[in-house]
Amino acid sequence: MIDNKEESSSKKINISDYFCDNSSRFLLAMSESDDKFNKIDCIFMGPSRSGSTKEFIESNYKMNIRKVVYISYDPKELVRDLRILKEFIML
Image 1 (cartoon, one colour):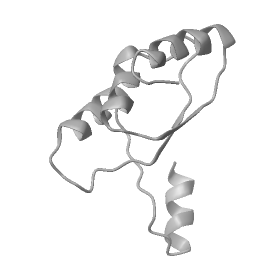
Image 2 (cartoon, one colour):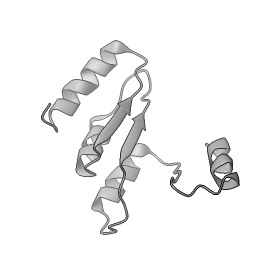
Image 3 (cartoon, helix red, strand yellow):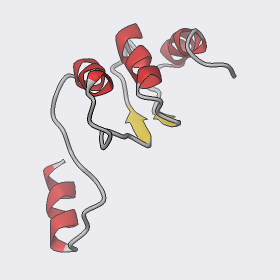
Image 4 (tube, one colour):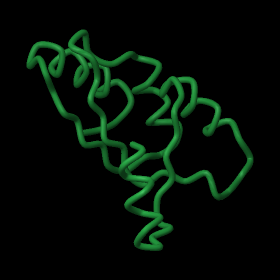
């Protein structure tokens, strides 16, 4: 993350922000904020081998995030997470 920030800064690119926090807690806080600039277009999701949490998936839905790139380390957990995701969206 530090390399990305330095690279963006050196090229004077100001199109992204970087945050270090518990992702579920962070997204839920953003979804409850009245700030109209709290808009996330895309999430790159690389959950641990145990998969994501229902809270994280729900917070993606509440933020109305249109694109999720899911990097799977375990196909079984991907299937589990997709079942949770299916509760919140229409495929």
